[in-house]
Length: 68
Image (cartoon, rainbow, N blue to C red; front, side, top):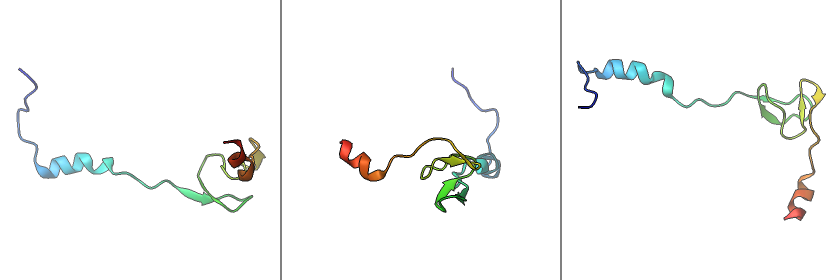
């Protein structure tokens, strides 16, 4: 026999449990170097910097299209 609840879970209790399951919008901030929006505590995908340091070099978007 499968799992069977001993008592009914009310809609209020069920809702209290599920209130933390909502999808949240990511925290965005403007990059101090290129002024584009980026996710906080992550490398800027536009310029490749994090905390004032260059983490990786970003290719030009025009060069990416030519590769295909």
